[in-house]
Image (cartoon, rainbow, N blue to C red; front, side, top):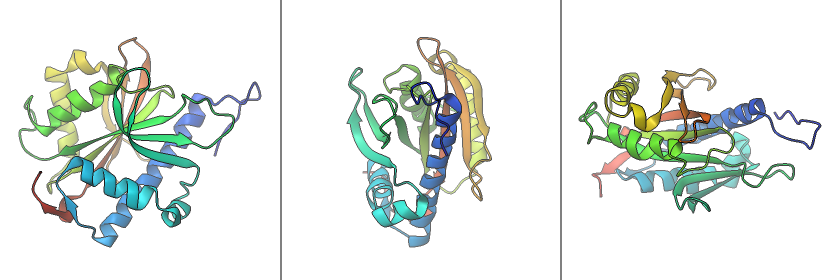
Length: 225
């Protein structure tokens, strides 16, 4: 899976991309298991993330099945230099890897309300999601990270993504420095709702942000806490 550079065993951009896409495939596999298991979830971002993280991503049997053994998943980890607390920090067990070369995933809920308004969940996805990577509150040392959108209502996900793009251009263009809007990807088999966007951070350094949109609407058992 990895391409090691002979000069000091340094990872290159293609290596990180391939590795991260493999990781996202594994996360989607865990999501599919959650759907098959018909787990019950509260309509709360932290609770949904914890169920995915604790019962699936950190379950040894599932990690073997999804080939995620070499990844270490931790929640609410403080960033050393910025004070930001990442939803999910992902480290790789490899002696040739730099300590700071880890991935970050931010989780946000999404629904069909006020989709182009500056105070709805779409806006939160942008202001308190995408912007945290652009502002470097979250580290992007590998030039690649991701967001997970927990879709809490039955809706057209592709439409919601297009609404996020419209909202970004209309109200948050300078905030998220988008070079490429959120576009559909095709590297995860049998899963239609994965995307990527390209941004410049506050130091004008380009990075890629992947987006997984996970429909968990059928699993909800209560309202937002």
